[in-house]
Structure formats: C-alpha cells, structure tokens
Length: 254
Image 1: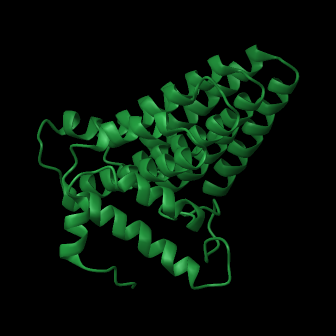
Image 2: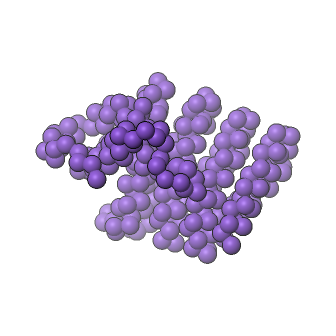
C-alpha cells in the first residue's frame, strides 16, 4: 500500500499547512503526532520506500512552519527527525537515516533563506546525525553500510556549508567545518571527488536538474554548479587536503 501511504502523507501535510494558515496550532500539533506515528509504522514495517516519501512531506510541513514563523513547531520536528533517525539506524535502515540527513539539510537551507532563528539549531541536529552510528555500534570500526550512510550525511553537510558560504554565513559553515575537521583526509577527498563527478556530469548536459524522474525529483548527491566554488572554499579550510588531491590526480568521470 505504498501509494496509499504516500497519499495519506500528502494530505496530512496539506491539513497541517491549512492549520498553520488558520493559526490552529493545536491541530498542527496533532498532524505532527500523526507524522511521528507514520514514521514509527514504516520503521517497524522496514518499509524504506514509504519512509523516503513520507519524510519529504514531513519536511515540507516544517518548511511551512518556518514560513509562518512558528519556530517552536520547527524545532519540535527537528528533534523528532533526529530521534527517529537514530531508531531507523538501530533497525538497520541506514538509507532512511541518510534521508533524514538530506531533509534536515534542506530545512537548514530554507531556514537560512528566511532568516529564521532556528537555523543554527537545525545545523546542530544535522551534525549530530553522523555521531550516533559510532555510539550505537560501540566501536570505531564501521561496516560498509555504516560507512556509506556516514559519507552520505557528510555530503549533505558539505552542500549545506557551500550554501551558507554563498549566502554570506561563514559562521554557520564554520560549524560544519569544526565538526568535520578530524575526518580522515582520504575520506574527505573521496567525498569531494564524488560531488565533483556528479556536478561535472550535469555540466556536460543541457538539463539544469537531475536527469531521471524520481519520486522526490531530488538527487541526494547533486551539488549545484553554482555551489561548486563555495564547496572548494570549504574544502580549502582542511589542511593537507590539497596534497592528498595532488597525489590522487584529477577526477575521472564515470
């Protein structure tokens, strides 16, 4: 019933937005509770696809709350995102955890664009997502799936940092840098290459967006060409990364 689940999520988001427009915050709070219940159900059912679609609708509701200056509701949703992300991770639904990271990143950008007071709190929640895997596993050694999830969240963080730099918010980009400054240089360089590869493929085409139809219309790993110079500026803060790049040579496109 994935299609039905997606329609339920869409209509729930529409109901929540109507409640925000009418300043019926009690109703908006009920909608948030329903979204949390949906998340619990998809995690219990291990239905990653439904959760993937559900999270976009939940994030759009949070963006509507931003637009209506309902900071308390936004921060509630951000807290729930982090909570259910950890539950999804414990359940082994690693891609769903990565999806939480992507949507938190999008929410952080929307918050910054609107000049909301919630931006730093959203960034802090995003930065804590990739710290939980080590604590949950109880070891510094990550499995291949855990490593993939960590890298995916780090890519989101780099994209958000580049966005902040373009908006003149170096202070927010620095928060991300300080969180990433102890990452292995080889991992950072690999992430940089993967982001550059996706951007370069786009640049060789006439399309201005991702080249496939998807349920979301979004590519988690796509860095807009306009953000590439700011991503380079961000990576330039890491001492020794340039030397690693020279050793590995230029990026070869797939």
